Image (cartoon, rainbow, N blue to C red; front, side):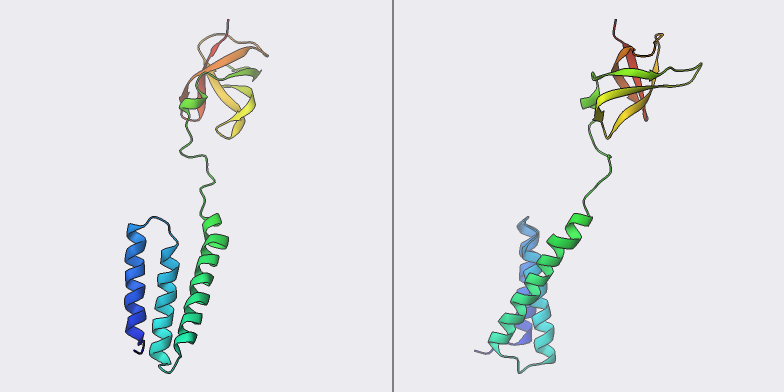
Length: 149
C-alpha cells in the first residue's frame, strides 16, 4: 500500500483534534509535522516512505523544540497581575517616610510583598519614623495600615 499526501493530511487533522482532547500541548507539533509531510508529498509524489517518516520526525521535533525552547519561555507572564494581595494582609513593616497632610507615607518590608519591598501607605493613626505597622487592606496601589500599639 502506498502512502499518498492526503493520508498525511488526515493524520495531521486527527493529531490536532487529539491535542484538543489530551491537554499535553505536545501532540500538536506532530500534527504540524504530518501536515508538512502531506504538503511536501503533494509537491513531490515520488518521496519514499522512509523519506516521509524522516521529514515527519525532523519537522515534528523542530516544531516541538522551537516551542519549548524559544516561544514558551517568552510567553510566561512576568507581571505581578493576579498575585494574591490577600496573602499580604497582616504583614508588618516599618515606616521610613512620614505621611504629610493628605499625603501618603512609605513603609518598608523585610521581604518584598507583591513584587516590591517599599509601599506607599495611608493610616488613620499618627505614626512616627520607625513605627511598626500592619497591612489592613489595599486601596489600589496604596496600603491601608494600622499602627501596632
